[in-house]
Image 1: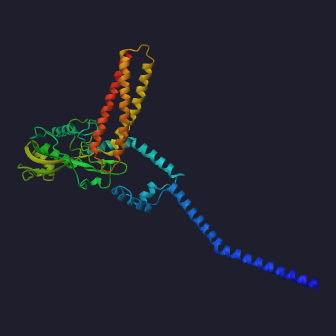
Image 2: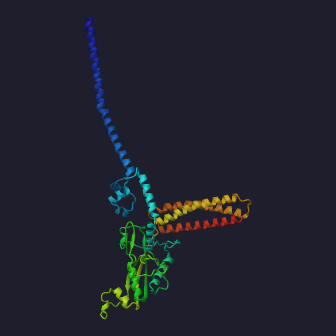
Image 3: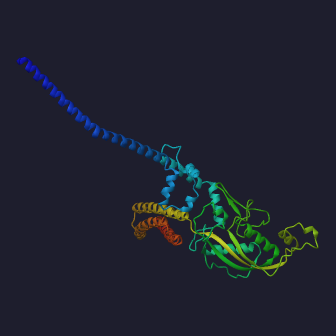
Length: 423
């Protein structure tokens, strides 16, 4: 009997343990289902999200943002709206999306190399030279040969009148005002090609001209066609003909010379009391000629007077020109630093300390001090250049002042070098 009771107790104990274990297992299972499993799911979701982010990041680092994102990005960043209007999806994909290089950084480096090659190519330089002629850079303060200032502009107008043998009632030509153009739509090629900065100006000129009909007609023909041009990505095509064979007074008449590759001008008003005889009644041989041809054949040497209002067009200082000047001055700072170091070595190796050497040391110390100030100021000028509403003419004048200071310092160093050579 005790044995049976013992077995029964053991059985009950086993059942109790089993039941307890089952309860614990069920509790753990519930805990897993209710808490741990969702956490695993959440972790898996986070992993997938992270994977997507990494994939998107890798794609971004390699290809860059798509066109739609670029448009969104551009609306809240300081981006030139005119530039945005000219960029469509196909252009953006072709020029801004990387499909070829392992990283976008390499893609940009390659682009930069191509741009550098392009701007240093003969074709690009030729294009820039044409642009300089048809829309020259104007600055009242400039001393650079490539820029148009008041004396050069006046010389150009005088040469233009002399080229066409025109006598003018203006004894002295001067620039009374340079005005900004608010509406540039009149320049047909400007609509689709933004080759210059936005600032385009004109200076008005009122003049009475008296000379032969032949010369007046040639001048009007020139004025009509001087800015007749078309642009594409590869080249600038400028009107040409054989009507006017002579060059502007100060230009060389080369084999490929084209007189129409000159500053844009526009005749706004023509008034005259004289007339051009278009009658062919007494000479039927001329009836098929244009008025231009008829006058040149039948009335070429007759006198003719007219009053003209002319606008001459020019561009403001382009940012790239200012940047080039700043870059050249930064290089000057480096070169002057090298020159002063070389002069100090030369002084150190001198056998006798003369008054010239003492004076040279003082001058070199002064130059080094001044150049440190100029170096800091140049960095400020470079920062000012990228500001949105900067007065470029004022900035350009300031840069030219520093340019002159640096030229003076170079002259001082040459003078020091010459004085040391006599020791």
